[in-house]
Length: 276
Image 1 (cartoon, rainbow, N blue to C red):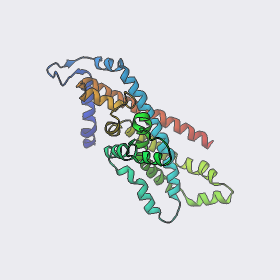
Image 2 (spheres, rainbow, N blue to C red):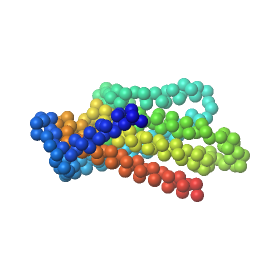
Image 3 (cartoon, helix red, strand yellow):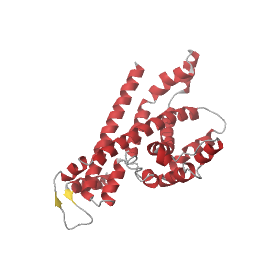
Image 4 (cartoon, helix red, strand yellow):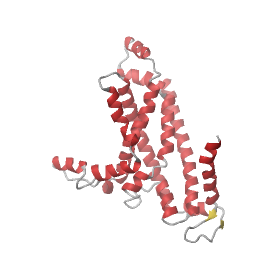
């Protein structure tokens, strides 16, 4: 507990402290308590609300993709088939790639409009190559982040499936249930708590996505991929306004709790409705 307090709460308390103070790295001698001025400056900045929208869009899209595909892959790898161990290893490998490396792989090897893999495929199909990061910036970020986090969702859901009795599935088959009915009325209700954990953990981590944006689009074009974490970075290391950046970090914590509570309640309500 002491280690956790030192590691997590002390930085958070310092963030709250700086959010109520004037602290500019270009003028460090001018410091002092400013009350809610930093929060007011952030809330009246139109870029802040754009970053909130982009953050929620990114989190929602990645959550939907990772949970749906992760659930499908978990059910697939729950079955017995030759080469399952090797296939599992290949599927989870993207999760161990560093975020910056992920961004560079997708930016330079896959999505580059001249020598990327997607451009080569388009040319061989007689189509004009697309500059993905310029034409579809947010969709490109969603794609690369989903690629990295699908294995995480699959691993947790697959772990939850291990406690599902195969005898229960066999009994359902004997009673005449088809594959969809087994999935809808047995597998999904069994994974209710696991799905809630997946959504909660992914929401917390996805709200802090930074490296992929920094290494691929730098928040652009314009503000198309400027999320709240990237805006905090711009305020701290672009404008050197540490107080405003700290207030943005406080908003990020509040936003993470609101989104997590909303998503978990929505999932719980849908699962309870499915059981009835």
